[in-house]
Length: 89
Image 1 (cartoon, one colour):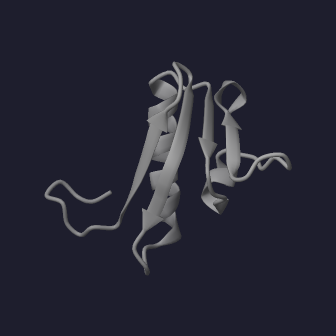
Image 2: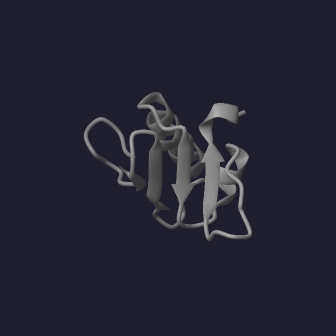
């Protein structure tokens, strides 16, 4: 995430697909000192991009408060967080 010319570098997010409708959020990182609103916007952007591309389920291998704000939940039987896109707020 940065401006049109690539500066300043603030962070990035990365995901991969494990099926036609299942995506996995692998990374959601920002540099120290980045305002929380920027991290929240990055989480929102990657989540909606995956949903727009057809994801019905998105799994993250980590927990993050900004993902929770988007509807991701923890499950006792799994590590990380899961979002059922079909019931996304």
